[in-house]
Amino acid sequence: MIMDGGIADAGEMDEVARLGLGSGPVSRRSFLVGSAAVGLGALGLAGCATSGGMSRAEAARLYAAVPEEKFPIPAVDVSKIDPKYYRRKVQYPSKEAAGTIIVDPSKYYVYRIEGDGIATRYGANVGRQGFLWHGEAYVGRKAEWPVWTPPREMIARQPEAAKYAGGMPPGLNNPLGARTLYLYQNGKYTLYTIYSTIIPQSIGSGVTSGCTGLLTQDMLHLYGQTPVGTKVVVLPA
Image (cartoon, rainbow, N blue to C red; front, side, top):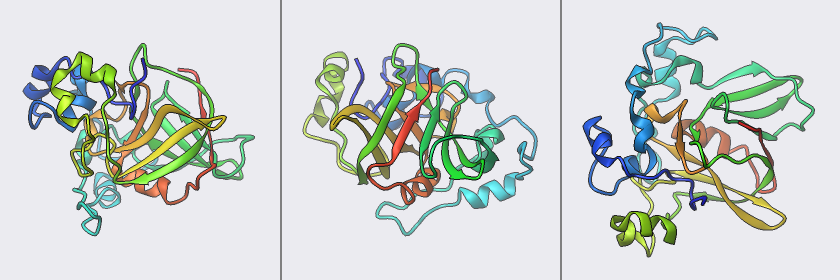
């Protein structure tokens, strides 16, 4: 079943801890990364420039710390991301209107259509096997620094999550991060979100319970340009 907020299972917490991604028995990292953390150490081994020519130094500036936020956002360690997932403008012919968001889970990208055959492309994490969904939706609501509440199904599988049954307060360790776009169909919440993550290793992987995560700096960029009602197209994986 799809989990509210799109957070992955944490059944392999020991492995997450071994990889240095955990910060306690129930943390953003253990919920989000799970078994998909295995093998992510191979990311970031590409050369010093992206396919679009962005150097690591340029990427570091793009993904610099954001200290003015309610909860100061740390800089991204860009060496932990395959450079092809850095944010950039790309050629992307589409019949969709400017502003439309397109999620391509098979390639781990999210596109914002800019018009004239151009899109802003963001690297993303997506749903793991068994939690993939596709179709058309729209942004039904938005939230800055949202509260996250684990659904009953997650608590049943992971009793340690019960302490957050009343909601996890906003903050860097909250699984939804700094910004969240909630996807709706026909006036009903689909239980899917586009949310922000501070875990660079997760980008380019299937780690969630169906939802899509962007690096926080990328999510701030997308969120500010996305009004409620924006069309979202999730392509088949």
